[in-house]
Image 1 (cartoon, rainbow over the protein chains, first blue to last red):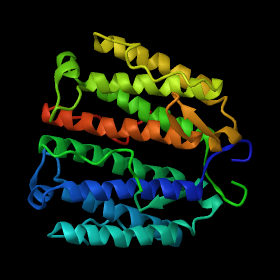
Image 2: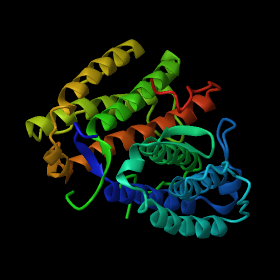
Image 3: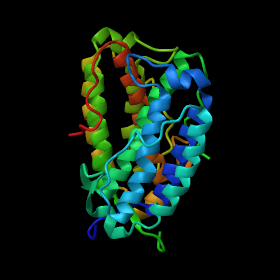
Image 4: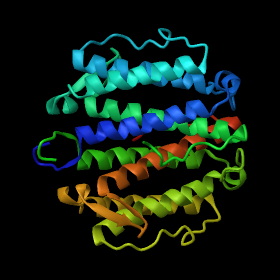
Length: 159
Length: 159
């Protein structure tokens, strides 16, 4: 990074991510209980499954990066039956992400790490991937809501 | 930014964006000609319209930032009738983005700019918004392709 110029500071990136997570939380809330767990298009997963994926990545990944543990990705550790359970866990993971993200040093962002013992990339790339993956699946979620005749939250409302 | 640590260098962010743009290009290619312009879910725009939106943002926005011009957003300037026209324009804008992005200085990323005479935010936030907006709409595009029974490109393939 010595010959280059920074694009964004780490605490700005964390705020950016948590803004996206707020919006995703609103998308989860916008689904009726039944459709959250059952509705799908073209054989894709219902939005509850996508939310569990996002919950299984964010907090555990940032914790793994800080502790340099390569514990495998585990989507089976959290098997919610209600929207309320998902939202509660979502909020808990918000705190986990804040807690660990702030412990990542400048050097670590550029260092390679084998996330979940499987994804060997520079840490900044892994973190951008979490956000992109969330925006991507949430885009699917918007399509589900529109197909259900439900107005999704504004894309630009983050806080 | 003086008391903070950088998350990502500007040329890494440009590479990240162009990787996303490569993937979006593949999604455009994956649509059959007719469905690209006509297929939709829940009253949303066909993917050709979304591609025109992305084309109307990226290059013009980065040019506007560098030249400090607040020229209004204009989606009517490009009205393609074929997939080939969209892909050709997409590739032209790739060069426009590369050309102008590299002229943005470190200070500018943190400065506020009234993009398109309408979106007054720090430059780094505007640029992240372009990428997020693309990933968001592309997520819709994936849902369209799945609904059409077409396998979308791999999300992680960018180059």
